[in-house]
Length: 242
Image (cartoon, rainbow, N blue to C red; front, side, top):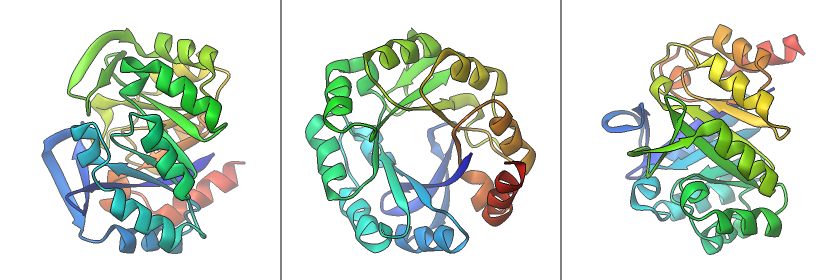
């Protein structure tokens, strides 16, 4: 299982939100490039980059910084990027610039044709983010909760050709109290496609629980920034368990 550090960008700075709430923001640095270098130095081979301003606006807002990240560290770490990517043009612009994978979230509900087209045009390079609150899919930077079931949507999209999913339990995100393992297991067991887990990691035991649930990878954000988890130790624990 991969352990992937998160770099969430808002206003050009590195931040983490609690439960996706823009009013509950913690600031961890003014330079996303320096943060990327830090995680690579500690052993990261992939980075999870989120344009929070883009997620809120519905279109990429931190593209310049993200492209600088590609130029600066793209030869040493693979980048997966999300936040405001809702058109084939925006997805293609990132992928053609050297981003390894793009993450589509709200488009999975609002414009599935774009998701399917992106998966067809860029095989293996699209992740659909399923962000859930009490099992129901949330969109628009998690501000809107739909009546669509998370597992049901994932199954539908897998049948349409989506190759990989990112599952986040919103109520656990940033809380450091452990992931929703049962919901994660339900998602993993329902799909043949790999699932990346996010939300709630607060300890090495939480990472082990995600691995045991069958996730392909786990994204770690606040726990790293708050010193609850050492990236080096997390990577070593995964290697040892294998």
